[in-house]
Length: 289
Length: 331
Ligand SMILES: Nc1ncnc2c1ncn2[C@@H]1O[C@H](COP(=O)(O)OP(=O)(O)OP(=O)(O)O)[C@@H](O)[C@H]1O
Ligand SMILES: [Mg+2]
Image (cartoon, rainbow over all chains, first blue to last red; front, side, top):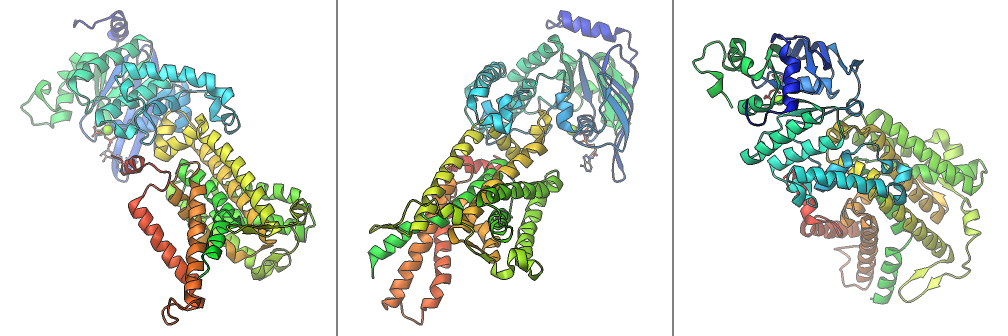
């Protein structure tokens, strides 16, 4: 095993030991269970997932070629888009049709493939905004700073700690618009963590992040799992997928075509076909980035 | 040419009743547009509701002015809910369309013959509905300084008006610097991002619409009381667009912007008018070029030109930050 192997990694992997790597397989302790999730755009079926479960406390990668339906699947289960049919549960609770802000409050927070930094807010305000249960968010109480000032300092301290972790602390007073593309990705991820989610769903968190920072981010993502959080992420970078994920789910043309540990999935014929089409003479390891 | 008179007229206007009315309308828009990104093109409707609530309640229903003011605020809240509930879930442009239509509907209903008995039709309502307010006026004489001149009633309106404006600005400052205000600004930047963090965007947009609408309707109170009359055509779309002008002139999303904008707007308007008027009657401008009767229109052209130049050379407005404005381009 590589050097980063940890007790938590082993725990997570142990949970998958008894799971057969077939599409839609049941997991020992799923946080999300989705059934027959279908989304059509006109004639195009973007998502058609028969059954999928996401194991709690693990890092699960969702991979697949461009247009496979990964982002659409994220949009559906976080309430940003509505399904044609299907249902899914979070912690056993049906949340179909739940509006996005309520999904987030239930502990499932997502980031966006096209980064959504709040441009004309400072980096620090981007972070502070995300804290939950703020007293000053009510119109009336907002008028009386003494009601929320103490809480605001606690939130600020928490935000600064995360910003330090994500190497953005020097930028805290800048407008988010002044950040680079990669830094915005980092900000968005850090901001999602301010919500203290149970599960974070990251849509291509590493796109455009420089390799050195990527390494440290990978460390942070592992830390999240080690703190008990569930991570589901979409990524095209196979090195990263191999490095940090405990489990990999492969989507192609809206369906789940394979599941398994990173090693088993990378060699899977269905996956290679999905990425490269039926005729190919490349192996996935040197394949698309 | 009587420059002292020109100055006196311009300065009296710059801090006068109209400035207060437009400042209040623009403060409301600042809440909507400047801080929340809501395109409300029906602000005139909120002023109309405020003005008519007072006039109708006192004149047609014989209700005390103070209660009428509360009714006016209640009505503007109802209007905000009517406009907001169906549209604020939809894309931003829907609110713009609905508000511009609603503003016109309110004006048309007010001037329609059907409701002549209560709303006064196209003549509006004129009466002593401000009596209770002016009874409190301690000034028996107006102000007559070389640079400033008000009748006793105007002086009273101006003083009370600026106190109200100051009070609202303090509330506004507290609000926009609170977590509540931060949420509005975040909504202005990207609603979906805010939703993804567990915030009920819809609720906050409605609160913003109500708050800005109520402030606008207070502008309507000033409009009605200062003139002791309401006329439907004063509350047309031009009022809304002048209020936007005032806001942009001062710099959107700046608490003090509507004040600076309104002062400059009314100073320029009156200054240009008086200057032209005197120049024409003194023969400096030949009659064939600008007649006395055309001054009213020409001043808008000249003020418009002036505002265009200002926007070209200072697009961020008086208080705005040019760097921040540039971020609009989604750098
Ligand atoms: N709003 C939409 N309207 C119409 N078609 C859409 C819409 N959103 C997605 N699609 C289509 O659905 C399919 C899945 O898109 P999706 O964005 O989910 O892919 P993805 O797996 O996230 O791809 P990528 O890796 O490139 O981000 C694509 O064929 C896309 O064209
Ligand atoms: Mg995608």
